[in-house]
Length: 102
Image (cartoon, rainbow, N blue to C red):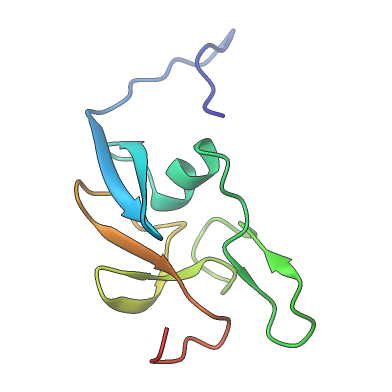
């Protein structure tokens, strides 16, 4: 789901890298956010709302909301919309309240 060709814009992608999301190997490019790589892989549900248990995905994409919080390399409540993907990182979805028992 990445844009490959555009009539006006050009895309200079970084080196191809891989990270693990909930046990699945995900392709990314250096400089790309975790959220962009997940979206490109077709993963659009990040967690569920705490009260009504509705699916949540990318919302603001600038690090101001809490829709994209995940555990990255053991650090809970990381905003993946502004965190760049790195080779070998481990990303886990977490429950909406960010409990320590994720």
